Length: 255
Image (cartoon, rainbow, N blue to C red; front, side, top):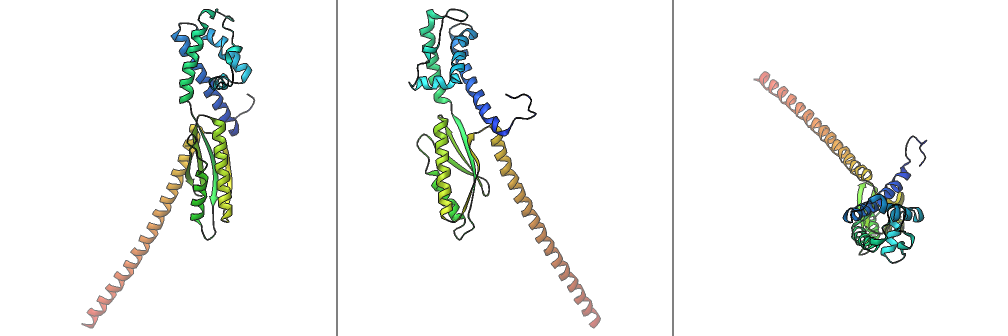
């Protein structure tokens, strides 16, 4: 991390938050196993999670491959050192770690999101946009469902809740390709605003503020139109009342 920077670049936020979430998840596993076996968590981390983190980037990714039987992480772990020798209970520790890992990996899901602008000024108009979005939804599978929501026309957000980030990214990219092909075939326009990325709480708040902001603008415009209309009505009634008074005055003079 470059500490000389005054602010963190927007594109650097999501990867770091994802890394923090992975490290926090594994630390929770180590803490649970250490507590249940009455051993020091630092001893367990020094023998298991820290070496894996140094070798594979994150212990989370290494354990994920281990659970999927793509890798045997125990070959890289030495329970005898450093610190207290945990060799006598290493089999139990391995079993406990794997049990907690499987449970947490099943529950751990990330939300990915991409944004694009879809519009059509040709004859089919909004119907072409709807068809394009429905075409993009066809990229969904049983495990990876693509949700498409309107942020503020013509901006749409595509999101996917998944356990496998790489597969989720591929599904969203496929959905974007389907939308682009469908809308351009109808002589519409497609603009990619943001590629599939890890969603943070701030992103959700921003989407909500965009919606509320557009809603407030429309409400304000509606109120403005209503005020103008009522103003015209008041003016018309005033003219009518004035005309009526003049007519009444003329009638009195005639009498």
